[in-house]
Length: 264
Image 1: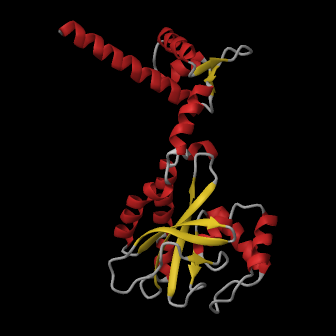
Image 2: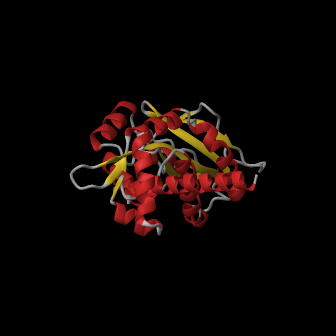
Image 3: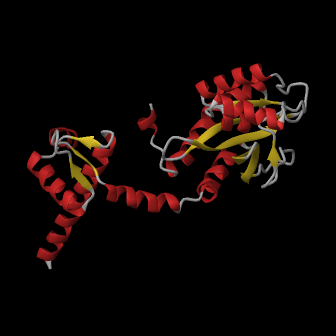
């Protein structure tokens, strides 16, 4: 029995090391030398070589015949595709939105781009009797919402202009941006800072801050926001919420396979 337990522990350790090797190759942008792997993982080169040989046989790693380095095989892509196909952004975001709502006390929303409008697909409603009211399935113009600005912020400029010309830039309040060049400048700021505001631009008495949700490719696939009455979300409070909203957007992005270090 003792002998069997030792074999089992050894097998688990070997499996752990194999995953560490795969993760380290991924961290090295998908290709690494044996020397680099041994150094970074602080394991003997002979151990790394043995693990790599097994992974090559299984199809998870391939050796570059030109430089001798090792890179991730297509079998990894097959596994990752299976995972990604089963990811549901609403299911993933639900609990995180609840956490965000509890932390801020305000309504948290998940929004996607559908054609030339923003669509609310999930929310965690504030417990406060006075709160920002939104409906799942509700549509909103892109130019007057924080989430809309986020969803447009990294889109090709000609596509943004096309959407705005088709949909128009409605003046829903005195604060709505209706000038194209002013709005494009706003998008540049949003892209640079990683968040967007709605300062009573969609509805008087309501403010929000929004941040992008990214998938495994780094593409913006959704936006989350915190919305509430202007008497609670003051301009000072709005600025204080920026780090919070960005952190929670990153939480959802990580669950979708996004790795921040790969895009810096």
